[in-house]
Length: 417
Image (tube, rainbow, N blue to C red):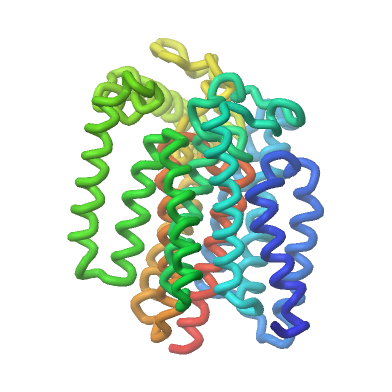
């Protein structure tokens, strides 16, 4: 590795490690330093190059400006500004840092860092399930969810099972890319073992959205590389998922967390009522504040005001009960139609341009790596349906980090064209 590239590989590896192990605990204290370093290195990485914005860069800036509308109508300024500083302000820094620095490092090394972090997080999570103990939450950091989920659903370093499932499901496609790119048999065997650990960890989080993420991510990965085989793979994966659901329905009495994947639990009316109630509340907020929404974290603040006349089954029992329980609904309610339009415009753009870059790429290595990042992004997006994904540090960093790298590949294809 060239000496010049060491700061970039160190910084990108540091961000990946930060997202996996430290952001859940220290993001509110370190985010200022983190975005400053990322901004500085992003500027330095552009040295000697003609500075220009790609189409995806422009979509990102439009998205960021639109999301700033969540600061217009706010009842509790301090709370809204806190969420803006932690989760919206870092967006362009993470995106441009990843996109500008990625071309100066060994891309396969980045995959290895993701694989190692996912493996460590998965092993720690499995140990947590087996021993019914997590030293971090028992003795170091207070976690409200500890007593609720310990020994039942995997949390690892991420405070909440769904956040853990999001991270591990988002990293899994990258480990598959690494497996395909590795030539040595021994290394392939080790990587395959890590993939198995990460996969089991996702399952042990017992998240229904994660099951969808695994199916969607696997299908999209195969579709990017082998479009003709995608239908067959989807059928096999769907059959495996159906068999797993049947197994969980029969075995739930032996190990009750399996009930979350049972037919009875997944089809329970209460789950649909909760989702519908939250959707109605989001529509009410949009009706009152159609353009800029009610403000960041104000779904929670205005929860009681907009929940009148609804059954609100199970809401308010946990700290995450007073939320939209869906990232798209959260964005719509808290940033309005303008914020929702900007976000969906960018998301659709990055996926379409990314898929086009996969098809146009002449390099097999680039196609495999880009397929991994796109599939990881799809997996994270699948988790939007179950909680406010981008309001947690780790998924937030991972999501915008992936988009920056995908934008890099799209920009490279444009230059070659």
